[in-house]
Length: 494
Image 1 (cartoon, helix red, strand yellow):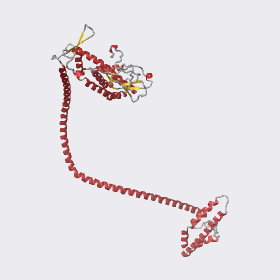
Image 2 (cartoon, helix red, strand yellow):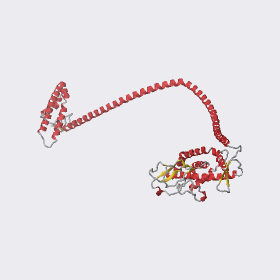
Image 3 (cartoon, one colour):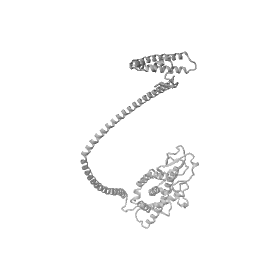
């Protein structure tokens, strides 16, 4: 057994296999070399040494076990020359001359095939064991990772459970107190609603009082100013008679023109400057707010930005034109109404102006708006889709007509400036639009009219300047009083 253990520990058969593989690799070449023969001889020598050790081990084991295996299997092989490879082949019996194979033995070819299959199976088994070992290590690593994660999750669950229990204890403790607080808050809420309704009613009364106070203050200011004027005029009078006359002789020796000066100014004269300043502010607000809203409405139906601006500009110009005509008509009716009844110290014209200022609410603004829309429909410059109706900007036209009408009652009148496309740009009256060509001297079109108080510009307009404006635009008058289609030339206002 000791010799077998030595062979097993020395791994001599592994060395035999390695040397045999090396000899086979070198024998695969075309020419046989001396080194190949020497390697084969080394394999043979090592095989002989191994056989010697095995023979010794078999002999020892046979003697120890009193078995006849050594005599029946090993001695015939030795007697046949020791190198005979036919051990285990079929043997012919002399008596029966029959083919006989020793019991428990296989042929030489079969044994070699079995050995080869055994070696291959052993290699496959070792490789499978290595793979299984690697897989096992990976699985163990995954199991350990999952165990660590599970431990963390369990720890988190335990923490959350403890927090939940603590929260339950706190909520249970504060539940009764919270119910009482809710009832108290509901009661306070009901009381606050009652107080709020009472406060709102008081605020409504206060708002009415404030408006009344504001009206009374304005009346007091006007009366105080009128009182001061009266006192000044009274102090200037030389005679106790309330009226004074001044005779202005003309160059003609036949006729004398007599004019009367009113001892007290009318309300129209007293509020003239205040109304003028307010109207200028409203005109600026019309440009900065209402005009932008009208442009937003028009952009939904008209794709061209230039056409939207033209529409708003033309609407403003037409609003001033219609307001002038309405003011003349309104003033004529007032003059005809007051002429038979007028007996006061002021002139009839002053009385008419005062009547117009006091009765601005009688202005028929709806008729004026319809006139503006009709004139815009007949304007050849405006192009718009069929679904676009100018009543969409009805609020803007109404506000422009109202401002223009009230401006006619100011002395001197506030009016928009005359303007024509293709003319030179005037920096004193207009400013350029953001998309203008700032080096262009000519105006392609106007987007907002300038406001004039006599010869002074009190609110600048807006103009779009562009090079070659005369090639792209027609010289069409855009003054506040153009000649209308289908209208009598008598409607022109200079």
